[in-house]
Image 1: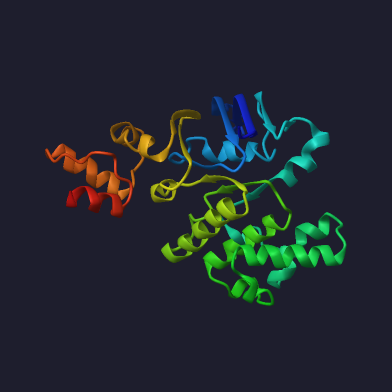
Image 2 (image 1 turned 90 degrees about the vertical axis):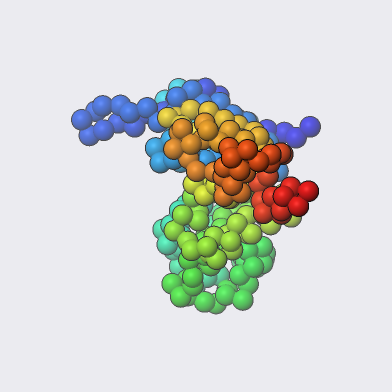
Length: 278
């Protein structure tokens, strides 16, 4: 039985305007993420998905309810350091996370703040760059890299801290298709080969297909949750709340509407080809 690493219990959170008016961002959210899981959270802008993500490493605190990271309550100030070492965060814009003029120095920034000995820092930097397939760029200047490469360096900086969980808040939003593929390949490698628990927030539906579990948010609530095939079978509901579905799911939906029988809720081209060939 896999152990829970993130537990969200009936969490409410509000944003206050300059006039002091409160806007509800999370409305009684409860969920559990288990060790080694790859969870994708989707929802349109304003659905609460990024607000929820910021609760996972205590950047935000619940107005009520609680968030536990490996049993540590994010409201416990004595545990904040341990929580942020356990749950690393990667943001949308890699330029906001790069702090040094040389790639390997940037990746070393976190371990240096842990006051590790130089040989341990060197080891962690080398291993982190290897994990994101960026070793050959160790001596490069980050501003010469592509968007996808910069984001992989930002991920390496988090990996060097040795977190058990990585939360990625729309890390591919500013990237072109090749950059998105680079980053998604990296995330999947870390999950499958390094055993890191991944929580990936995105608005690209194709990125959710290969998750273990997809969580759909709307107006600060979880409205759907389950394996990708199950979640994307609810095409009408997803469209009602303003979300797209993966292209193959859309194709199957339209063919079924036209009277063709497309069983099994295909998610990718290979599955669709097999169904059509039969």
